[in-house]
Length: 169
Image (cartoon, rainbow, N blue to C red; front, side, top):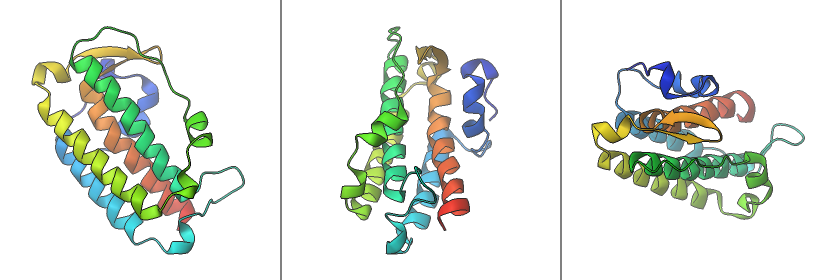
């Protein structure tokens, strides 16, 4: 499915274009998580704390970033699906990374947390009606639909997997 451009701002196109168009939100969420887990679970231990350049995130920080982003965006999806018209604030990913303790955590605990979160995200999206998926809210000053957020989760994860393949392996 190709999402109408009025459901998200152009910035999110880079993520949404990475999802498989003929799969549902749920199927994309499941597929992206399997690919994520299969690649990262087999990463050599020396790569767990690896950053490919000065000031770049470690693998642990990258995983925590994906977790944090999905949590923030799930809250947005829930609010919009429930027809809450409150404009939601943005979040600064760099502040989040600067204040997480990802590098002090066990790598496999981060992977387990991501799996648990993705299972929760899937259950959340299974609870939404077709009408709720089309609802649009405002976050960070931009309109986005619940449906676009659902595809964005997978696209964001795939985007970072591509970076892992290019710069961390």
